[in-house]
Amino acid sequence: MSLLTPNPQNSSPEHRLLMPASVLKRLHVVAYAVPPDATAGPESAASADISALTDRLPSESMVIRDEIDQTALFEEIVGASAPLRAVLSHVTKVAPTDSTVLITGETGTGKELLARAIHTRSPRAARAFVAVNCAAIPSSLIASELFGHERGAFTGALQRRQGRFELADRGTLFLDEVAELPAQAQIMLLRVLQEREFERVGGSAPVRVNVRVIAATNRDLHATVAAGTFRPDLFYRLNVFPLHVPALRDRRPDVPLLVEYFTHRYATRAGKQIRRVTTETSQLLQSYDWPGNIRELQNVIERAVIVCDSDTLAIDPRWLSGRSRGTAPSASLSPGTLATHERDAIEAALTQSRGRVAGPFGAASQLGVPASTLESKIKALQIDKRRFKAGTGS
Image (cartoon, rainbow, N blue to C red; front, side):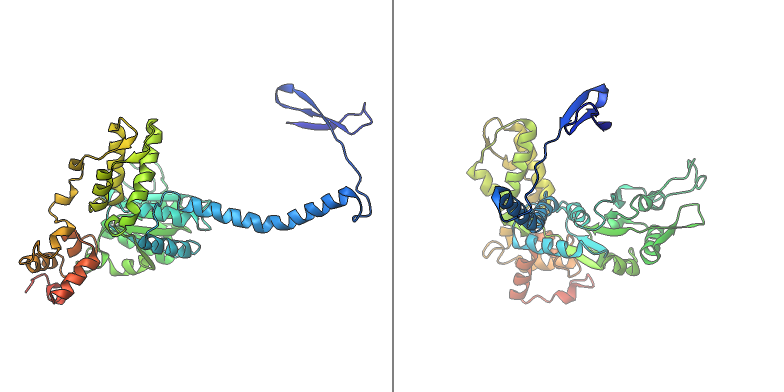
């Protein structure tokens, strides 16, 4: 619509609207006077009703908006288990701040989903969310990728290029696999976190940015700091608000919900109607330890949907081969199974993990059991974890 004019040929309140493609539409306006006495007549009652509705609108719209925000925030984070609810509670608390967040957890647990949820609920939501996988970029190019470069900074640098920090200005930068950053990039990242400025590769002028940093890793940063491969000052700068994402085996009640969610997603894409899961499949999915976590479950369900020819989903047990990859199932530490050897198995795992129980490189991960279960077994067998911290096991 490009024009709204009164019709001078008509005394009644009529307007002509010139629409695109020179289409002319006529608009006739009808109005009724409101009696001065607001307490008389049906018009007054209508006016009162409108006023009441107007007063209620702000509060009701706030409730609806909150519900929409909650749905949008955790749209792809499926589950209702206590460990997951605890993590999501921390997400809602840290999201409105500008604090740096360090997300830890095993591969495939959904660390980037949590980072996106934090960004979505933050005041920076209207700005960019820029994700960088630090392990996927060659060490010789990581500085240029993060901080940009000037023309002629190196062979092939034909023009100035903005880095990810500049692209994320006033938004959020997600550094996945941050433990893989080389030493020089760690120094540059530390400066950005401290000074809010950096220099492009080959440049001399400082570039100021306003970026919230969320980092993630599946490695034990305490161990990498102790090994001298990760700067302790950078670790403390990143570890302002730590968030640990539980492994799927530690939130088993969420497995049926995730199965239903992924089945619906992939069945919809494939144009299939899948209404149920076989009892054997349900038991298998619940008992499996999921070393690849949610990503492995997602892949298994997608594969099952592709080969499904009926309305019932079934899983081939041979697809779940992760349990045998050098680890023992949870049942291996049950009474009677390894009664004479469980101390040796636990001590061997503690030796390899240098006394650490939890985490992706901890003894519990090697043995394929929850950390809490292993802690209880260590206590029952009166094993001193401290004597393994030097890695000698003696």
